[in-house]
Image (cartoon, rainbow, N blue to C red):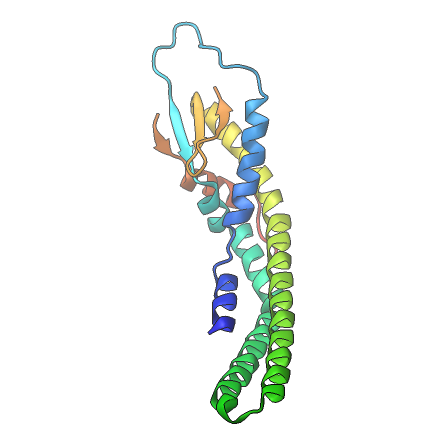
Length: 195
């Protein structure tokens, strides 16, 4: 009951937080860039979109990084699942025997359960923090490489603006299509994963 609620938060982790942080950094960098100046004689503004979260997850390097993180943390996840199962058994046992226990025994068992639950929550939070740190470390390099590719691609294909789909941040100033797949393809060509 209590344990399941705390543990379910762990399973919702993904690269989203890492991408959101990196996108914010990029938007801050873009905000401090030179102001937009219209090109003389150009009537139509070409705009493109990219979804960095999708791009990072679809690059071979991103897939490899995700698998690496999962492998590194798999034993810790299993340990947390074991702790969760143990806490559930203790909680169920306590609930079943509650009516026959003395007040002192109830208080003692409640303290023991709370102590174990707090230890479990600390372990869970530590693992979640470690996952976020590893995701940030792994995705930061990919994000920087993707950002450089976006600028290069936009210049080559005469795009005036490139927006990040999720954040709406202008990533490049210089037609309204999603270039995510093109950028992922270019990235995979240039950044081969060592197997």
